[in-house]
Image (cartoon, rainbow, N blue to C red):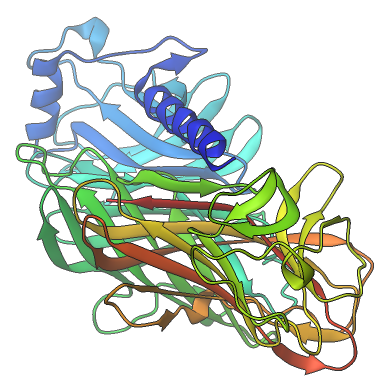
Length: 492
């Protein structure tokens, strides 16, 4: 079952890479030849290429934006001098808009109008190419935003699209923990200055600031720290007068001759001090990264039949998966446990006996589940051990997974994340902590998505371990049911 998911994920990755670079458009595409593009990249005036990010306010669409401001001077013919904007969505679709206005080199542009069937906006910029502003953006009849900066060979711009979720929501109406919203950033690779674009609550766009520093090369890849603020204050955005701060890691390919790399990814955590809901916290992650998939599991073939080093149908491979905290003892890596607490079978939820189950969350989706009890999994863990079989050392990992919880009891229990290696100590990641509500509901199994980036060295042949641990937190009586699903690990 793991190989099946890996094959599907690999196919999706290849599709994503191919469609990202393919010109897919319902509108007429314009392509500059290399000498024209070089001319624009070397221009120090308002004439040139502006790169950045795009999102609709409701987060349904996001992508990379490029505006080509071309004059009739120099190497361009009059017919090729029409300013053009190109938006490449994260799904690979390309949309264009053109302007009928003429740009003059060194002369400020004010409210140049770009129009097409799907995309319209106004563009302004100073005569020297600074202070580029895009306003009145509409995409497919929906309000949107675009954030761009002048892109040259001497000051390359790296736009990165992504999403964020809230992990500690405190009931905030605009921050539903199960819904992704847009988190885009633009990095000036020369100065390290960051501008950020966040969709908030489905109707508001927030633009913020940040810095990139402490960049450390490692082979063909470089890791940098990214933080909100200007180096004096750490405030990245404000909303209703209250600060939003964030911190994270940027990983990109640093191959010679390609100053902005040929791939780039980032992730991190954020905090929002609200007026009425306390401190809200969450995570953000980019759409694309420089990492290869080294592990994937969707548990669709698990039937709750236990653990074995040579798993039969419906069992988990104990060389990779194990559980602790049951009254029947602990499953060791490479051990066998196919009865009792470790093999409670399949259920759609609502069980009362503690142990490991294959929960069917909706009639089609199976998860690796547990029903905690007084002597089972309070505390307890699920663990996944992944061996580095790439033949080279790995230093960067991206982990994503889904938590499922059936909050059918009046007790709050935790489902938290930690990691370690053969030599690196146990490290918890508080930003990924999850605790089920104390008060029960009738919603059935609900999905909560989580992801994080980890920087730790794992030599060829070594292991990295991911732990999902739970315990009682609040309330009394019986406990909610939990499960793990769609675990994907990328690394380089």
